[in-house]
Image (tube, rainbow, N blue to C red; front, side):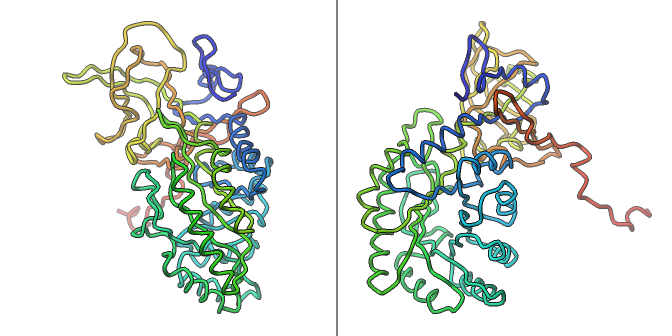
Length: 419
């Protein structure tokens, strides 16, 4: 179901968004549980013949209710920090369905993963393998690992989210991978179980996935010839969504394309989708404060800024912006900007829409991924609330931060108080 107009009213899973803004202060994020479910099931159904372990990339949206919904659907988790592992365990995702990614795992994070007996660590360097071996030995355990391989592939996406070029900080170069596997196999408390690559995010073509898979399958064959028996091949995530006029492949399209190549490997497939699960299942709702006519352009000033939604500023991300309630009237072109003290604080440039009035509400679409998860308190502004529809109702799944919350972790030294 997701988001659609019924008449001139924007609806989410049958619920009028105008009814939510009467109860929840803006800005806030709103997620459609029906859309999340549909998106997750598109992977289960599209890849059914390959029977993959689907590990949701929870960095895209780590709200506990979203994680619980996905846990109930049978998802595993791709995590990158102690906090993410803590949250997915709290949401009920089974440790045996969790993979730990990241190039900078701390000692504490490795211990937490070992103590919870997660499925595997996707290790990124020899130093990490050494530390993991030491920590596992101290605990009388074996650490299950896959080596993250950097296949030097350009996924054709934004440079900041291209993660498998030779110059990237991620992974072990393909030419060094065999040496990395030999090194890992020489350690007493490391169990090598897989091979992993993640080439980037918001990828809208199948070809980069095919190129990556071919390199992984070939490496797995060569390792098998050397007596290295693997269990898993992790293709990572990165499948994009349509923000404007992109035409990304569906999960079923990707499955059909990779099947002939993957079946040569005889390994269990792992996928790490994030954006394609939650991206189009979320919006950000914001209130119009002012409409300002400038000498060169117009501005619609809203109460959400780059602190609430950084993607347009950080990545140049395009997100459609539409009214919660449509109306007739004069159409204007304007920049939609927030209240932050930087010129880079914008949600959209030169957007055409019927001139709104102060107090009207706008929806920033396709904001379910890398939206609230990347929000901050810059300018000492409060973190936004989050709402999710479920079972024919809407639920506040994170309260808006209070001003007391804003200072609760800060302390003034006693010496300063004496002055």
